[in-house]
Length: 321
Image (cartoon, rainbow, N blue to C red):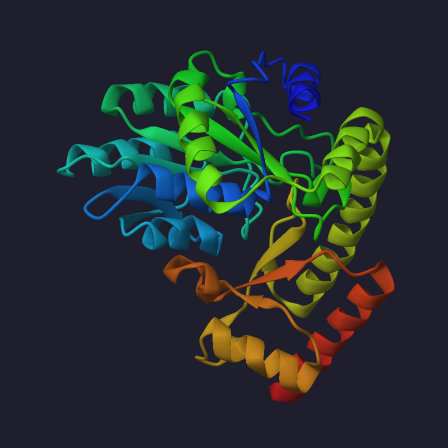
C-alpha cells in the first residue's frame, strides 16, 4: 500500500517518496491527524490554525493539551505575511502551522507557487507544517490543486494527509495516509503503536486496487460534483445568497443576506432551515467565528434532491419575509 501511495505521488505531483520512511497508512486521515498532533504537542505548545477551519484541525491540538492561535483564512501573499507577523510576536514560537487546501468548509483554493513562501516561512521560524489535502483530487473546471510536497524543501518541514474517502468513495472504510517528513512520520508511527494494530488487510487491498485502477473514476466523479455545484450555485444566486463558484472540494460556501437571517446567527438560521424548509446544511459558525453569516452546502445528494432543497429554501425565504 505504501509503495502504491509513493507511485501515485510521483505520477500525480512529480514527488519522490521513500515508501519505507516517508509514507504511513492511517485508519482514516482524521485518526492520523489527531495522533500526529498528540505525538508532537503538549501543554504549553501552540499551533496556528486558520479560521474558519474543519473542526478536527482545532480539536486535535486541544486534545493534545496545546493551544490554538487563530488567523483569518487566506490564500495569498498577505495571508503568509500575516502568519509571519503572528509568529514574530509569539513567545514561545508555535510548533505547528496547519493548512488545508482545497479548503473545508469554504472551498478556497491556492495556485501553483503558494506553498513556496510557506516552506520558506516554516524554515525561517522552525515551524512544522501539516497540510490536510483531503480534497486535492476533487477539482473542477480544469483546476489542479498543488501539493505542498511538490515544493523543493517541503519534506524538510512538513507532511501532507490524504484520505481515500473523497476521491475513491471509501468513506467508512477508514483508510488514509500521510506523506512527507520522515521524522514526523516516525513520531506518528511510534504513537500509533500504542493505539492500534493497523488497517484490516482487505481494506488495504481495496486501497491498493483503487490507487492502481481507479483514476478514470475520479474524473467521472468530479464531473458529477461539478454539475451538482452548478445546480446549487445557480439556485442560491437566484435566491439572493452570495456565492462564488468553487473550483474544488465537495462544498459550496454561501453568505446569507442579513435580510434573510434577520439578525439570527448561522446556527439558529440552520435550525430554522431544517425545521421549516426541511433542508439540512452546516452553519458557518460551526467552523469558527469567521464562519458566521455563512452556510456550507455539501454536494453529496443527486441533482434532483439538490434542486428540491433550493426550492424549499426559496419558499422559506419568501414566506419568512
